[in-house]
Image 1 (cartoon, one colour):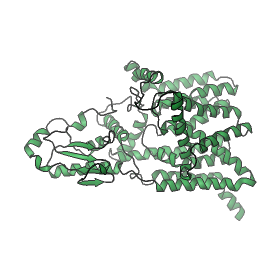
Image 2 (cartoon, one colour; image 1 turned 60 degrees about the vertical axis):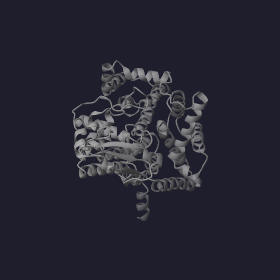
Image 3 (cartoon, helix red, strand yellow; image 1 turned 45 degrees about the vertical axis):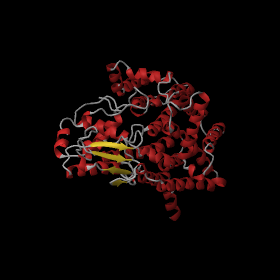
Amino acid sequence: MKIKIFKHLLKFDHWFLVTISTGLFLRIYKPLGLFQYSHDQDLAGWFIRDVLINHHLRLIGQETSSHGIFIGPFFYYLQIPFYMLSGLDPSGAIYLPIILGVFAIWSVYFTFSKMFTKRVALIGAIFHACSILIVFTEREIVPTQPVMLWTIWFLYSIWLVLKGKKNAYILIAFLIGLIWNINLQLVILLPLVFLAQILSRKTIPYKKIIIAVLIALILNFPFLAFEFRHEFGMTKSLVSSLTTSKDYIAGTRTGFIPKLDRTMQLAYKNSTDLFGANLLNLDNKLIFWSLFLLLLYVICKRKIQPQFGILLIIWLITYILFFTKISLNISEYYLNGMNIVYILIASLSLSLLLKNKKIRVPAYFLIILFISVNLYLFFARKVNENGYLERKAVISYIKEDANKNNYPCVSLSFITSPGNNLGYRYFTWELGLKTKPVSKDVPVYSIVFPLSLVDRFDKSFGALGVVNPDYKRYNQVSVKKACQGEDFTINEPMFGFTN
């Protein structure tokens, strides 16, 4: 009886419930304290305000780092129900990444179990649920947050094509329809579909492909409508971005070898951070090249279908070459589309170790080490105290102080570096703080970040400070007169937001 209970507890599905519960906890722990609210989230709020208050159905989201290219609106529309539940406060938006993150963990388990075994699936789910890199990436409320979820299902779709499953193209069409709304750079993976079809040596399912094309066109209707309306401006900008130095940032390295080195350094960093190995002070190249060698090993030993292994190699090479070629100065998140391949390789390799009784113990040790290291990194992570709680508290304080001094409006100035002066606009509207441009007749409140930039401040909220106006300089008559007219918050242009 005891043996049966023990075997029952060891079932993969039961351990998966533990895994997904752990992943959920890591994604809901201190939801507002770890809500890194900044300009991107401010823009999202402004988008949602435009839709709900101005009744403006928008075809585009914010402008990306590549000038002239806008991201799709789908992720913003998904946030609307959660904003409504919270009374249009941005705090409601935290539920969307939680849902998507938990769905991503389940997706790894489901797809890996279909492609391989439940042992591989469980290990993959553990990696995705507990990885410090993935946890904090999936806690971000930005349109690119679902990149890893998208790549999980794209990986599964090319496996289906390789197996000759005709319905694979319906899934691919749905994924293509989401690309513009997540990250246009995901387009670089689409040639893998054609290559998978060739390597499958199966008959091309023309009827399914026709249906898939129609689905992709319908899902991309907002993009097509925007392009027709604006004379294909984004398409032209995209071509220009790929063929010129339009997005080059002065001071960054140019040339193939320097750019390749930059891309590889980020690939090394991502693969190391993905498994929490940065805590172990290992050479940052070790994890990446170990994974690559393990991939070659499982292909040579026929532990993975050679054709599928070839697609995985091309997947990694495509990312490296593409981001070496373009003029953008890339960061780590540009390479997040490679993470699912790393997870699959590691999961397959550990699964093989677990099947061998002689080396099973070291395999369990590696899994426990991974979980322990990443949990430590999660709880030891320093909170950057200039997020949602602190920014809203700053604007709330200014609003209360302005009311106390009978100021019908105020001006906001910023003592900080460029970029850190953004991310307050939505709160000024939400809390009803009327603002005007800085002038001698309007009380000026200065927001400071970091606090070390000033000798004194009147109030602090985490890493943010507020310097109150010199009350003696202002009289009620001149302030009231200067505050007449339009609200600067509502009527002035907003960086990255296009009507």
